[in-house]
Length: 119
Image (cartoon, rainbow, N blue to C red; front, side):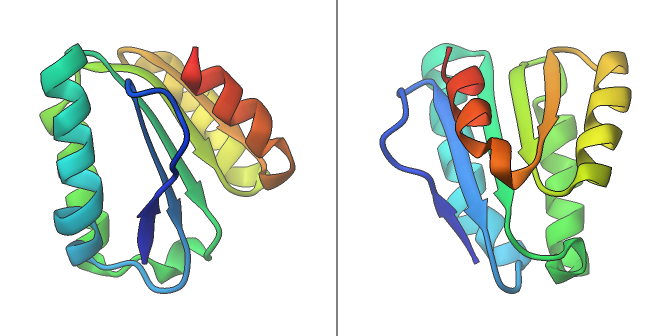
């Protein structure tokens, strides 16, 4: 399941993923919020806090996540991914080759991630 993280500035699309994640989570929660931010601000500040294992994302969710990234490829302003140390390193390395600014954070750094993506 994916839920919106409330209480952040309006220009931030932030989410908490836990349990099993499906394509419907993207259809009902992620995509509408990202579209809302895009329509209002054009550039998107995005945060995904993944509490589950990455294996909790089913194939449809993985595909919808990839499509989301491509649809807004040049519109990402800041992207924060919060998960384990491996995802942090992956995001920090490969984020250098993508439009926008990408940073990975561990769960103990969640507040830093929220602060960074909110500015």
